[in-house]
Image (cartoon, rainbow, N blue to C red; front, side, top):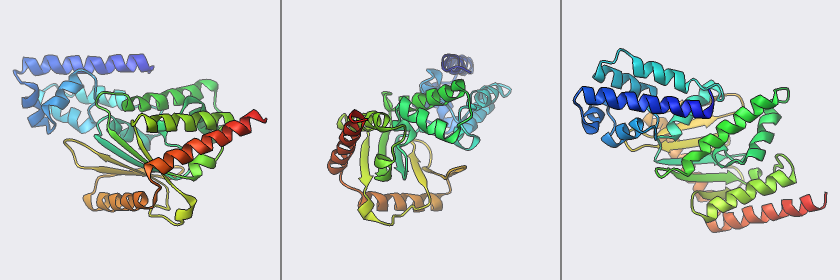
Length: 277
């Protein structure tokens, strides 16, 4: 499903939700109370600003006695083959989060990637796919990054291992553009990035990438990912351990100011390298 038609489908979902809610004589707050979300969230579902998770759609069906229509629409819309099955749920949660904290051990995380960088990452993992497939994946990644421009954008913290600055994904030009993009977002205070330097040595999450998400009306969630799989966890004890690990990473990282200087310096190094090739 193309991006435009997908958005139109979510707008239909919202319009239908509003119609059925009003037919049932419920305010947004009254429906939210029964669905276990805020009335403001119901309003954002109706305006297609936020997308409900599947369990919320199921509860809406129960309250409005809508014979499963919202569950069926939600299942259809979140069945997005541009994402691995284990990651699709994370994409939906990102759009609902009030705070996202990531640790990226080797690559610039998806929400910060430029098209050129994302294209190089995609091709490295899928060398035999069509150009159309690559562009679909890149488009999906850039679409995800749109949450950082929304009025309701989450706080976004990133601990970026120094590896990510010096693995030359896509070559010097691509890296210079990518790091300039990260630095620009840092200067504009859209994201808070701290670099974990090589000198920090061993760190709290040697196993791979970590994402923590917090929500207004739901418990926090942790997501971990390795090369070929990912795990979404909401068990409170495990999430607390993940949060502690992230605190340790932040404690070992450079300050935001020193991190920005290092990102900018690496970008300049790539520019000089590109000018001599």
